Length: 420
Image 1 (tube, helix red, strand yellow):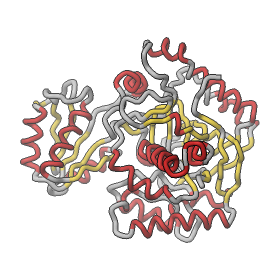
Image 2 (tube, helix red, strand yellow):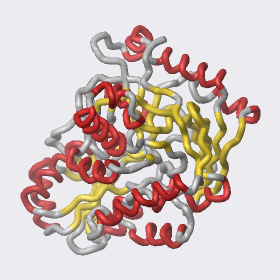
Image 3 (cartoon, helix red, strand yellow):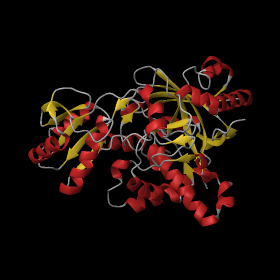
Image 4 (tube, one colour):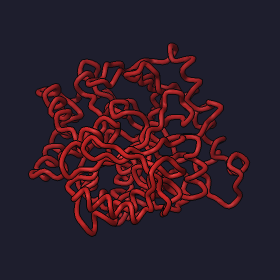
């Protein structure tokens, strides 16, 4: 059978009474909204929770990071010792997430082989990044994962399966499968349920993925003859998977290739979702620039990008206080508007200071843009149909190009796996 890089895993699921406070949203969300995370901390206080074994990125620059990491590692060991999990060995899980909107996003939980993944731009591995990986963001995350006993994924990877051969057949027969969890999710998260996939369906899934990875079928589908097969494209959690890869490479250097190849850290637990799911929206990731002389910034941006009023091929809206202006780039430095803007923001902040945050949702952009010294940027729509062809032909997109839905639609931590 054609190699796919996806396999069954030993999956840990917190026991049902814990789930309503266990599940918290991905750590890279609400990075400019401390009130959100304060509410999460209040909601989960005193209860076993993924909040206690993950590190929300809003706190990464705070004092006491090392102490927080030590606490995370101790808490993981405590949870394992207290036996709060049910373990499903060599399994796959079918999951349905009912979003705040009422739509249902289906996926499969399993393990990706990090030997089949390379996050560097231009790689041609089965598993690839879809946007630029900021290598500077990896070391602090490696520090968090290095001594961790568990992983709990917010990683979502995408397959380009327009005929619905891999995931969709499970929806029709889920009532015949064993339901192993169901819970509401806090703070507009909707709800989630999961079913244990039986051996027959697991084998069918593996065969369907192998068919997607078949070289002849791949070349016909995308009209290419000289490109490596792309089966899994990163959707969410790009830097988390990159961190898992780096930790695995570090382990190989420490204990050798052969020993590392048998180690659980060779794999990363993920959710696989069909790009063509009607519940999967692609949203642009907007930006806010903090702490600059806005007049000087606008002048330099206008000159560097050749901005002119109105909409065009590469247009975006910037906001200062409550005044917004839509402009078009006439001196692009990337094939995408977001890339041209990001290139300038990188150059400007390096030379003049300021800090960029990446924002899911226009409301938060407008809120921050009201403050003195801040500039908000509303980016144009991204079409998901272009994702696989662009990554195959051109390589990864600019970093933070797209997001799959609103912040509250992101994956919530639930399933875990031992990595030590």
